[in-house]
Length: 92
Image 1 (cartoon, rainbow, N blue to C red):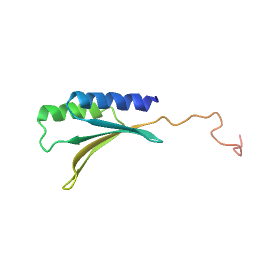
Image 2 (image 1 turned 135 degrees about the vertical axis):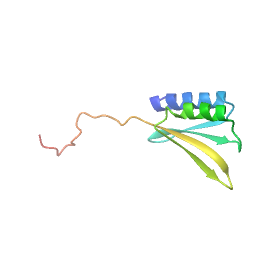
Image 3 (image 1 turned 60 degrees about the vertical axis):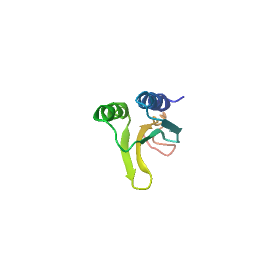
Image 4 (image 1 turned 180 degrees about the vertical axis):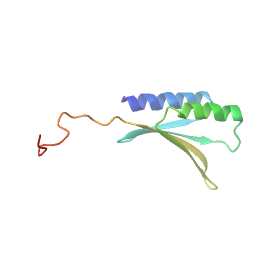
């Protein structure tokens, strides 16, 4: 599992420990975590949720009148490194 997957799994575990059902999805450039939030969330639970997603590269809240509230977090995968960054036509 890439490092992004490990970090996302840790975020998901913290959200699950707070009583929220987290979904983790691997993508090409990142790993995402999503949870559906209830309409009312006590302040102490909000604190736990925000502390959990603070380790992500990005996070946010999508709120609509049709679908409720979804908290999302993104952990980027590391960019591959190469010894020849300039490519074959790069002059030195």
